[in-house]
Length: 82
Image (tube, rainbow, N blue to C red; front, side, top):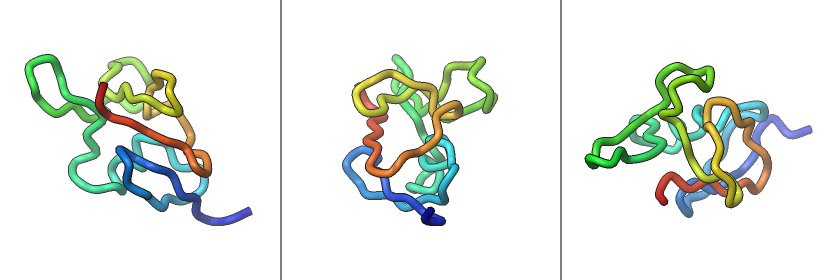
């Protein structure tokens, strides 16, 4: 088992440690770990880290997921925009 995996975030290839959450991968990818943009245009990042606040909603392989509750997988495709 490799110590790292590769996934795509908004079209960019990102390398993270095996077992990382998508929320952690967003942070590794750069910026402040923004998961989405609010209806008023403000960047939203994971807040609670346990799936309650819903601030980390992203698209993972075409399905809506919580970034803090989703473990990264090799080749996964994450989209932070609608």
